[in-house]
Image 1 (cartoon, rainbow, N blue to C red):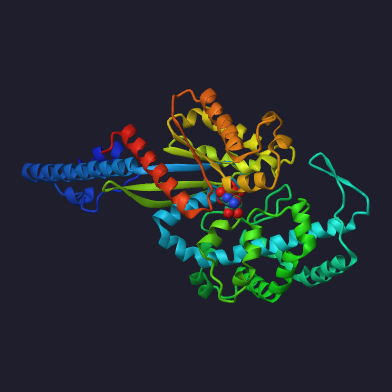
Image 2 (spheres, rainbow, N blue to C red):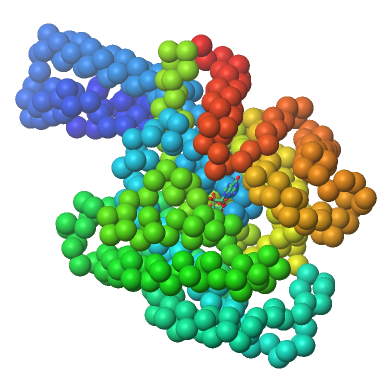
Length: 471
Ligand SMILES: Nc1nc2c(ncn2[C@@H]2O[C@H](COP(=O)(O)OP(=O)(O)OP(=O)(O)O)[C@@H](O)[C@H]2O)c(=O)[nH]1
Ligand SMILES: [Mg+2]
């Protein structure tokens, strides 16, 4: 009955939004069964009973809303932002390694086909670049990075060896597209990017539990096929990787591999073992592009209080950035990653844009965003190991960043120069007087990164406490 003293106030209570009525509240028809005339005493009894039930429900709702508020106040939302390949997913794995290492361990088997994909992709890239180089007419130069580049000179014997290796490895390399498509669940990205893209929950599709339910899924079949092919091809891959022509072309930058490719090619015999399970270094080195926004959460204990740490790992390529915005307004903190080794690289999605330039522009947008004005800001100038290697190899910054001028081509000078540029952007664009916390990072170095993670994590939680007044 709609006129019931219980139904009226409760249904209109604002607290009821999204909640169901307590199971202990009897339906109105039991309080005043229709068709029965009630005495004054009975009516009073029903009214008092209804009031008691109402009070109990209100009390439960109040407690529930308090619990919710408390949980929200203990929720720390951290977004990892930055261009593609800046190291966001690698940082997420480092957080997972520190705060929830068991979950990382249990996911290791699902990384196996992705590591195999990284090897296949590296081999295919080498074969394609060799083919391109050998097909160029002798003496015919080409333009690369604004410079004329002579074709690589290989002896007839070297060419013969390469052709033989190539013909033996072609079937292996041809697995790339099928494996990429299976791992990405059929997803591809326009603009000709080749790779594996993952959305939230991808590991479940490859887990051993899933294997027993769906023993012959095409994902499993192609992953097993790739593992067998790799086992059979490992000697040829090693010969190719150690070949004088490949080494020579790599040193002349005539072969462009993913940054982690050398790591996997050096470890090929371990990775090709039939019972291979990736270790932590493999998982950190793997290249797997993120699609959209993937949430990872785990508890962090600070001073006896447990905080729910929610990390949002986003896809950093230009076509992915629109997906970040809906997460901005309640973000507790932003960790922005800028790979400062990328001064000599251009965006895969726009070959005219220098990657440092893109990072600076993106950082400008993040610092000026009104939606993010309350978010704690952390900047990680990443890939310092690769920066050191490039400078040691004699790659000159001034050639790619003309404003660098005649400053010394040394790590301390180059890293301070880039740092100053990012800090300058923050000074100019941040209107809310926030501090900017800057760290130089090398995300594959577990020990160094873990100590930065603890500092950053605690600083973010402490600032959250200061802001919300949460003890
Ligand atoms: N040498 C070196 N490699 C790194 C470092 N940080 C990340 N990498 C590697 O760089 C590659 C790209 O890193 P990801 O973490 O996948 O990059 P991302 O920012 O998540 O990229 P998207 O998902 O495409 O936006 C991986 O192969 C990592 O192992 C670093 O500090 N040094
Ligand atoms: Mg990623």
